Image (cartoon, rainbow, N blue to C red):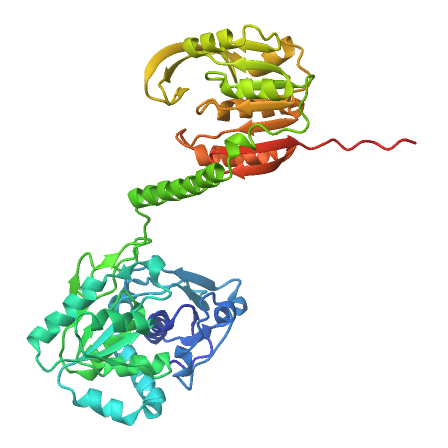
Length: 505
């Protein structure tokens, strides 16, 4: 390092785990060495690191000097970001006024550093942690002719893409087939998972956990062969073992590295790299759809069991303390008129029954011909005037139901209510086989829902985007009504919130 006070200062803005810290350190040290400059490190990021990492690597060098990026702002300060160069020797000559060069990136790969600088860092690692480690384990690793370091990283790495179990097992068994005396030394952040995985294949191994990440890294480097994960930590364990241990073993690595972006693998071409070894971070669309459908079905099944178990059709659907002869009830989806008949018999209310299917409408007309308080309409209420093709069968009717087709008419609800002079609806029952979404959206948007004192609606989940549309309607209805009870996608009831009366003066 140059003793010139006017020499360039290389500022390493440090972050990440130990593996990335090593890449940053050896790149920065290699660059400072080539340019005859001073090396300083800003470790302020670790004060609020989201993973809880600490600045461990810079504790290895007793001569390490620190700074902050803030001290190197202004004229003569330049920034070198990852991606601007692909190798150490690609850095062009800096401007004549350059006094500091701030580095921001991880700089993964051999092309970014001098091997001699990395070996010096390894020597510092050995000197720092070697005396603190178990002497018997150190001796065993050094004496084992075919010690295999296996690094399984899992706990904080799923977003990067986890190496597949089959990759680890295949690599281990390949080494054992080629080396009968292979001994497995396993390093993992999820030891219970690792134990179950290896024991499921009958593999004997020694778990290694020195209590120190730097200590484990050094122990890993003492092995001859390596099965690494897509992790810079195990990358350095293998590289140190290969380049500083000199035992000439095999390094097996995944070909993919980080699957959430296009980060290339830093592994040297001489390492054996297996393709398709990493499970990408992704959600399977088909699996997602399957879970969503099952979740919806289970909630619906639970609701319908509760509905029939509590005899909802005989209680909640027909028991109304506030209905009487002067009440107005709208039955949307009258079908054959059974519910209308029950309400009429119990309360003698005024009823409007809407059934657009001709055959069902005719049954309703015949059934209530002698009852002047029941008015049948051969159309449905909707968001607009339109003609639809609806289907009907023994089980139901609607635009989404399979069965015999029939052209039917819908009338804009808000206009119909105005023309009929409807000021208050005491009970609005809606069971219109998927048309409830547009109708309610229309009634809310036009303000007509404020006329509805009580709403009973059956939502249907075969309509596209049904769950989200119902959720939006629930949120909108909650502004004017309160939900009295709900059986999810079976039946639910809403009651108008009484307006606050102004106090007299």
